Image (cartoon, rainbow, N blue to C red; front, side):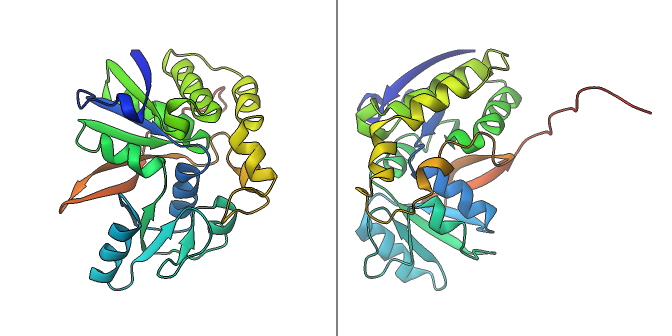
Length: 234
């Protein structure tokens, strides 16, 4: 499988298979939302769209990055989302980079959203789809975010059939400017555990697939075949 890594400005509409990466924090938060019971996540382009969608759908919850704001029920923090009961709920997510990147490739033949917490399942989903080529979209800092590039490189190794120690890639993410900002309290709507929650590998066993449903960009958990256990017994 061949791959390339681009930033959002380089997305040109030719991507047939894309993996949109936002480690800190959009697609770590999204994975936790699914773990906490969310049925689906609607991705919004901006705050106004998120609130407009919420106004049309009673019971849907709106989530944004940054500090709490009027009209929004949740913030873009895995540390805070992990305590929420989202059973059966629909969450509308708006973030600065992650949701923008996903919307840019939502019409691709296969579009997945990823972070370290779903890395293994993402690689399996790509393999099961028989993809010949994949475009990784690193969303942070116009494609320069160290944590997103590290995740893309790690996924590339998994797709090559390797079983690498994730340590070197996690160190790149853990020492990134974004992680430093989270630990230093320089990002709004954050929990003290956010940086470490974003560098857990394979915390969840599902990938996350985005596509259009009734004119909305909808993210859903995508189950892959379980990894065969090594060894045997009778």
